[in-house]
Length: 300
Image 1: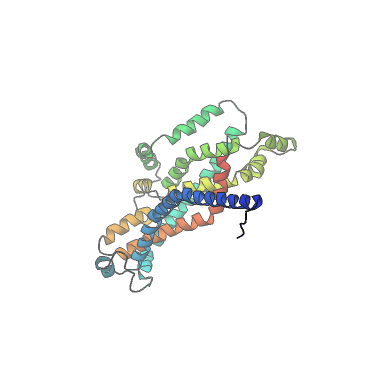
Image 2: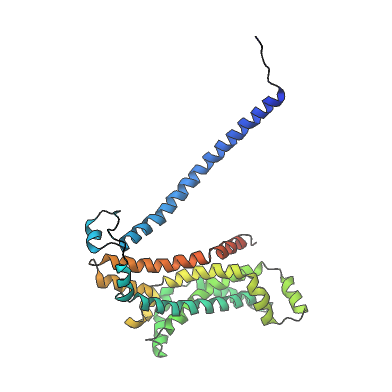
C-alpha cells in the first residue's frame, strides 16, 4: 500500500483555491441585499409603466371588464390617434415646447453667466448676491402666484404664453445659479488668468473656456430643470386662461375630465406620449448626465 503525501505546493494551491471560493461566496452574499433592492425599485418604476402602455391599447370594454394584466385583443393605434387629434395633444405639446425650451435655454444661459461672475470674477458684494440667489430657493412658488398674476394682468400679458415663459425662467434661476457656481468653483482660476494674459476678453473667457468646461454640468442641471418645467401644472393652471394656450399637463387634466371614466384608452395613450417625450430626452442626454454627476461628486 502506497501513501501519497501532498507536497507543500499542492497544499498551498488548494488553500488559496478555498480562500478564493469563500471570498466569491461572500461577495455574492453581500450583493444579494443590493440586488433585491434594485429589483424592487425597478419593479416600482417598470410595472406601472407597463400597465399604462397595455391600457393605452385596450378598448373601453377590455379595460373595464378584462383582467388587470390581460393583453389587448388588437394592437392598433386608434387610442393614440384619438388622443393626438380629438384630445388636442398636438396643440398642448406645441404650447409646452414653446414655453419650456426657450425658458430653459435663457435660464441656463443667465444662470451660467451668474455662476461665472460669482465664482470666477472678484468684485465687492458677490457673497451677498449669492446669498440672495440661495434665498430664492427657499421661497415657495405658491407665495409668488398672486403678485405675479397681478403684475401680468396690469401689464396686459395675460392671455399669452409670456407669463409662463417669464415665470419659468425666473423660477429655475436660484437653483441653476447655485449649482453652476459650484462647478465653476472647481475650475482652477489660473486657466482664466492665463486666458486673460493671452488677450482673451471677459466674454470670450466665458463662452470659449467657461461654458465648455461645465458642459456636462449644464446638461445635468438642464435635464433636472426640464423635468420640473415640463411637469408643471400649478403655474400653467394659474397663468393660462385660454383653451388654445393650455400646456400638456393642463391638457391632460382637461382630457381626463372630458372623457372621465368613459374613455380610458385615449387618456392612457396621451399619458404615454407625455412620458415618452421625457424618456427620449433622458436617453438622449444620459451619457452627459452621468459625466456631470461624477464631476459634481468630486467637488470640495
